[in-house]
Length: 453
Image (cartoon, rainbow, N blue to C red; front, side):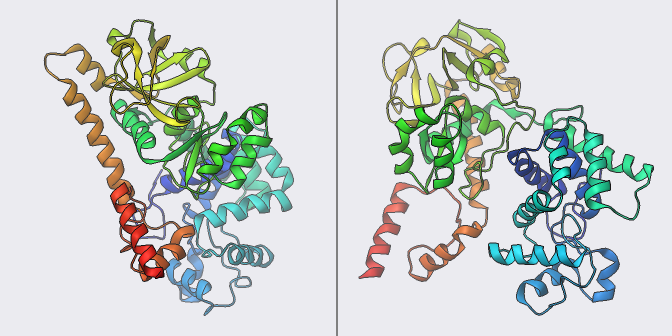
């Protein structure tokens, strides 16, 4: 499959767009087969490029993908709904559907070529105009059934031949394999990267413990969801004050949700439903702490040979061993939230520096989605690599994460506030999603106070 997005010169790939769409579909209740069936058809229509203008209309209208999108956004082109040109990830063509797409974009305050907006509209359109298609995509376990349903009942292209049905189903199957752990599954996280992200969350993010979440933003919607829906709602209300204390600036995790969130791609994005994580993706199932440890390899009660990145477990609770006698865990104990604790099994009763407490665990094991090759070599060749070298591996991975965040552009929801802060001299606006230190925060707070005087 040619994964480069058609019609754009940017470095964004169809695979990365596909992952964003996949996560949103799974979060909306689609089965993996249903999500794959829809994705395969969207790829066939547009290459998953949200700014894709139907190729045959580029010369006719005198636009490229980018100039058409800009003209619609700025109002210089007013015939978007009636020009009959396919546009966006689903190649919306009919005037009523394009008019509704445009109205939805304006209502959201987003560009007509915004990917998140188009997925939101797509879900709304399926629910209101194609409920039978949506029902199939939320219930089927068959990729071909899902793909045919989308092609014949939703997209309805001119070519509805058996050959085209098979072609689109084959694309859908590739997405299914990529995102669920099928034959061509290539997702696995190194132990060092896994540990680095766990430490990143513990040290650099405000978090609160609640049962169920895997890195949900602590906003009104998700806090309400955690305290009103499901069997854990009543218990979660006992931690409501902690969640409210970080509302709008932190995230909710339970113990196994910390592991699942990291492996599902959590990125600390407050604007995303699950903080950037997907759901039951990357071949990692949604399961509780007991099933998580049961899925591990080389499970043992002997902690003398534990390596960084292993899961540590006790009845009703699970955490991540990150090396140096330290565990990262999400717990209501101590300071409530994701914290660093001491592995008492190896360190004894003495609490290590930088940890909030000490805990004795029952057993540990290697997660099947984590690559322990380096960690294993470290353990078996102790004379060749020191503890400091192990820590360096984790620090290097953490530095990569920080660099990636520093390169991210400002999130749409923060653009106006950041522009105001720059205008008032509070910040220079650079590295908008980089992790800030306390000294940087102190300076910006002081500048903000001075600008009001």
